[in-house]
Length: 282
Image (cartoon, rainbow, N blue to C red; front, side, top):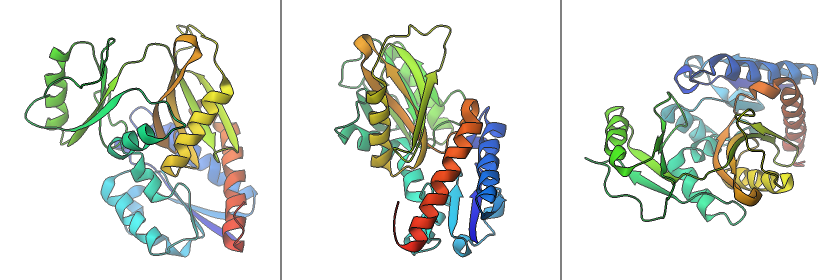
C-alpha cells in the first residue's frame, strides 16, 4: 500500500484561512484513503521531528523558509518518490523568485513589476508606467496579515509601507502596476487535469467577457514555470477581456470548491503515485 504524509501550513501563513487550509488537506487525505493510500498528517512543528523519507508521497502545505529548505535538501538527495508540490516549487512561489520567472515566461501576461531590496527608504518610483498606482507586496511568503499586500495610490505613501515591511523583518518587496478590471480567483490541478475560477467580488464585478481557455492557459503555463501541480492564483480581467495573472501559489485553500477539488486532487495524486513508482509518469 502506498504511504502519504500530509503537512499542514503554519498558522501564521494562513491569515483568516487557518481552518480552510487544514480542511482541504484533510479532505484530500480522506479521499486518498478511499483510493487505497495509507495517509498520515503532521503539523509543521511535528514535521521538524519527523523523517519523511519513508513515505512514497509527501504533500507539503508548509511554507516557512527553513522548513521548506530542509525538505528541499531531502528531495534533492532522493527522499520520497514523489512530492506534490515539490519543495523547490514552494520556494519558487516566493515573490522574489516568482515575479522574474513569470515575467520571463512568454505564455504569461504579468503586470509590470519590480523586485527591490528594502533599504533605508522607499527609493524612487519604478521606471515603468503606472497611471493607476502600484501594489506593494512582501517578497517572500504570500500573506501573513492584511499589511503584506498594500495599494499605493501616490508614491508619497510608499515610504510608510516600506518602513512597515522593514520593521517586520521583510528583506525584499515587489512593486507591481495596478491593472483595472475584475479580480478573479482560479484553482488548478495537473496542470491540465482540472481547472475552475470565480469572481473575488461577484457583486461588484463588471463581468467583462473573456476567453476562459486563455485564462486557463496562462494559469497552467505559470504553474509549469514554477513547478506546481496543485495551485491557485489571482488574475485581472481587464479592458476588452485581456487576462493578466498577478499571483500564483502552492496548495491554496480551495475553500469555495473544497469537495470537488479534493476528489480531483486525490485522483491526480493517485495517478502520479502509480506512475512514479512504476517508472511511467502519467
